[in-house]
Image 1 (spheres, rainbow, N blue to C red):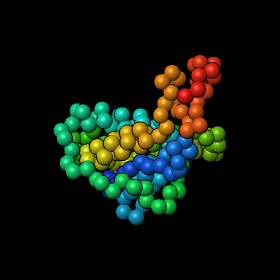
Image 2: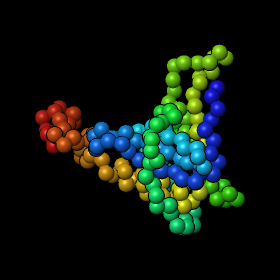
Image 3: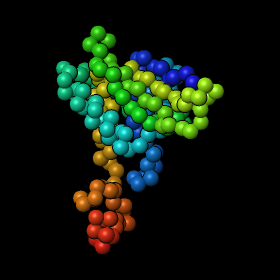
Length: 170
């Protein structure tokens, strides 16, 4: 099984996109010293992460100053495609949570028959949690608007809504 990317106390963590709305690719990126770990993820994963972090913050005292430099660091080269994401409970002693990201399941296995999926663990503090929640929610909102009937994105050229059997164009 591959060694995990373990950054127990990141210096920076962000989400970002590359490409125009409708063709954007979402990335989660963390940095500790010279090590930068970039993971490709889905818009829905960024939205769910932002929601989970916002809910976590509701139970904590207000954070200190949030980081402001939240741009992706170039070059954006993902280590793997994110699958499952989880947050550990907030540790009062360290003031951190750990974001655990597992690679999307692959079909190949190692000699022992175990799936050779990668994993990344990022320790993030309260100010980073807040900044990541805000940044993720903002990025999701900047995308294409969703159809009020089916919830699917509406392209600039229009949208044949499946809820109206394609008869209603938005």
